[in-house]
Image 1 (cartoon, rainbow, N blue to C red):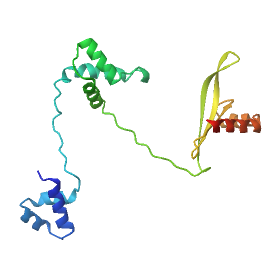
Image 2: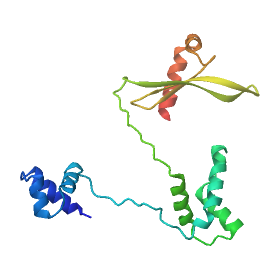
Image 3: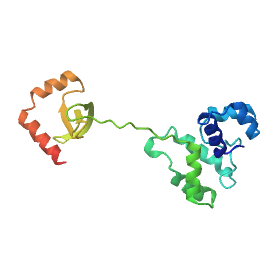
Image 4: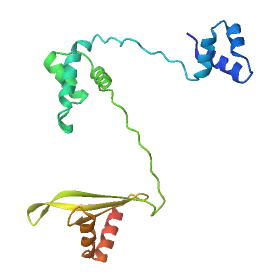
Length: 195
């Protein structure tokens, strides 16, 4: 297998010094197809494992861990097993004698979680805001009531502005704004700036 230094040498001779594929093949005693492959792909050569690496400590418990993870797919998010909880269950139920980090690494490989990608959004002052409707359970005069909320956040400052509305529609929001005195809006803004 050719090393990265060989690939760099071939690419340098071809692209910078103008050597032909035939000349590189003859000088380095490798086939022209290999030279073409090196010129086409400038990436670092990587080894791709054909067969998964055996794990003699964890493989006997693989079915147990997979069944726990399978049950977790239908369970509520807060009730799912963490790798630490799986380790505790293996230790208590199956007399498992290995480290927690081994279980965490094994569970991570089984889950094969993908990291989320985030795009940073930036805006000048007053240029962009995020608006959404929501609801919250509140106690009014001793009764539990679902209250509809209009939530707004200016993108630049990040200061939230929340108003209780009659319902989660734009029309109801506009109607509720008529009954909200301007002075109260300024009070809410100054309170939120303190946060």
